[in-house]
Amino acid sequence: MKAVVSVIGKDKIGILAMIANECANASINILDVSQTIVDGMFTMTMSVDFSSMSESLDTFSTHMEETGKEKGLVIRVMHQDIFDSMHKI
Image (cartoon, rainbow, N blue to C red):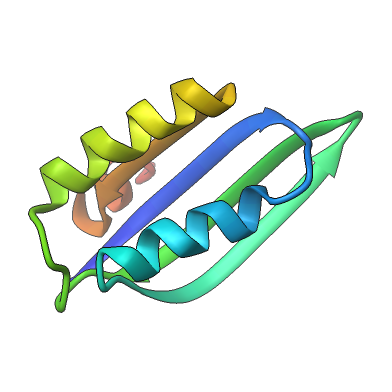
């Protein structure tokens, strides 16, 4: 079971590490990462496998949104099927 984690915000040290640690703490396996920094703005899209996750996807998503707010980032987590449906032409 796959999900997409997206992160947007002002670039600062440790964003990728923080997201990776949160995933590890929830037993989520990171499959792929794409990140870019343009004019000081950090953007990242991460594909993850949550089949061994220790909590529900909704709980993790809410936790990540709250963590993002605390860190000045916008973090969204959504099931891969929903992400795919949103991006079909």
